[in-house]
Amino acid sequence: MMMSLGLFVFKLNTLPYQTLHREVNYNWQENTRIGQRPVSQFLGLGKESMKLSGLLLPEVTGGISYLQVLEGMAESGRAWPLIEGSGTIYGMFIIENMTHDNTEINSNGQARSISFSVSLKRVDESQAAMFGDLLAQAEGLFNKASSAVSNFVQGV
Image (cartoon, rainbow, N blue to C red; front, top):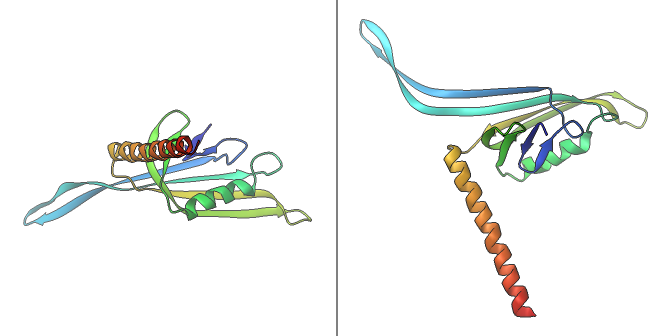
């Protein structure tokens, strides 16, 4: 496993990315002073984004169907945990943008080469907030399962 976004796993036979670009911004406010350099004050974390890009060879690696799975995830409007295969937890990300270019088209219109990029944007406030969100989601699932079991037992 290279990385996972929610339940989608990036690996060699799905969407193997060759480039991962991460950008983290920090907010600083600058105040000018007479006769001196401006002074800067740190205001906190800014925007964080990641871009995964790569080349699919459908005869060898994943195909267009894996990009369609990510499109479905993007259309859901949900944030997903992004976790690297090494165990690094990056946070909760939304799919902000996707592109793909099909080249080397064969006689049935299928591409033999698909270059793609997926742009992600971090939307959680912090790691602590992310774990709180995951806990709330898990509790919600547990409560739904408990009520389903109760309804089943009462019906029997």
